[in-house]
Length: 634
Image (tube, rainbow, N blue to C red; front, side):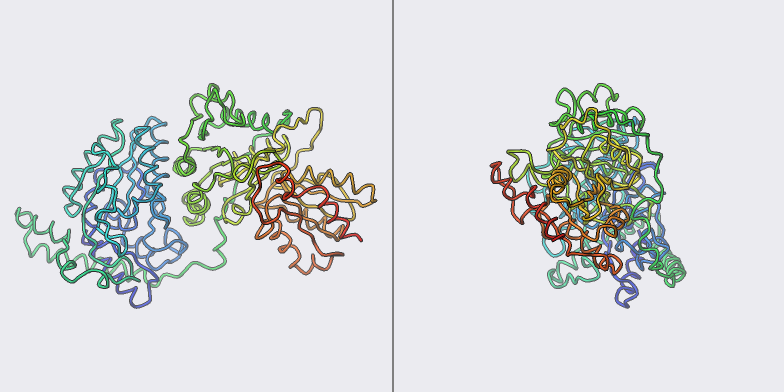
């Protein structure tokens, strides 16, 4: 507790001197250190950014936190993550992401993994009381209660969300959390915190399910080094706050355990020790700029299971490949809405898998954030989760987890934590009656996020290849499945397998390069037939992978034909296709090869109507592709 407080004092000085860029003080939260002893070394902690004393009591040193403060190359993130965003892989302390409450669903996912493994490990999920108004907190609570997961939620209630008083706003003050779940705790007193934590951990470890420890304490400092709490708190309020170190020291003196001289001497020694550790770290260099692109993706890949290529439809291929993955990868499990038998998913991707997978296919709540967030926790502790989103249109609730946890985890921890997660979802239009929320493609939203691999499959062979590739990867992969194509039969049609990561040259040509993916391939091939009557030779390339995309295959074709058309069903503005064209033509070598301006054939910047005739009116179609090609050769 003292070491944490002295760290805060010195961190404040460095912040004011401009040596530290940003600081989140933990003064007043030191009493939570009492909880550390209730958890074993194999228990996992998903911390809060004011848990400095708790984590010092757990596994992290002043040196660790000083490196974190100055963002040096020796820190756990090498300067990539913000200060006080703790992480310690060896100490089982999960990496903090800034969006509040985003740790809650991964925490219950990790607890679920421990439960499935039959172990007795417990997960601690720590959070501030203002953050408990986030929906993901409630989703995590409900999932933990539903499955009786071994997780303890530790809520630090210091009465403020930055400058907003939380009295009356936090859920503990409302009839929304069941009394049997919540224990009100004096968070200033480390012994009270310890005793409450021991009870909650014992309950979790013996199968009794989750608990919420609501710890009331005071925030002695401003919210951050950029804040001044004197603006919104009165001098009287500030003066009345309780100091956990003073409270505990006074008690030990009353007991006769320590004298005031002992306490003073301990403070003197702590100041010396912390000063020595600070002094040894302060001059440590920042990481080299050349390293900043490392660990966005894994440098290696597990062996890819050999494809068999015996499926007539995309649905068959996905079902068969999932079945094979479950049979050959014991760490793999599946999670999604309605995916258990007898339904087997709304499109039948998981039909019959539940009985064959030994209890590793699970229905989820109707909650996309829970699906993806729990999968983050599962993946972080060695599971290989494969999750189904019923439609990519409904990925919105999971956006926080996808963009802030899934895609950043490896990079922000320099590879200490990873998220080998597979997300698949039906996508796209050209299937009558979809309307606004069952016809979206949205690939540009996901390709924009660094750290997420994105593929679009268009035939059974590629479905098998892409899923097998995703199973073998240690990185998160999003697989988009065109609904219009998924039941088209390819019986008797030979489709040559393409090496992993490569685009497919569907048909060779010499005059125009037509790049597309997903539903666009069918339109492109129909256009090739029409354009043959105009004696125009078109080379069609199915990218398959959008991240990373096979740049070299496209460049080789462009240099051969001198003309480029990109066809996509997503809307035009800020789209993947627009970015691809820009990326290619801004290189002098490619621009010099152009015989005509590139063309983008895309959906109008409009939502997709429900009536089939209106849908077709806004979607890219054969006539538009033919016109675009002819305009480049005239």
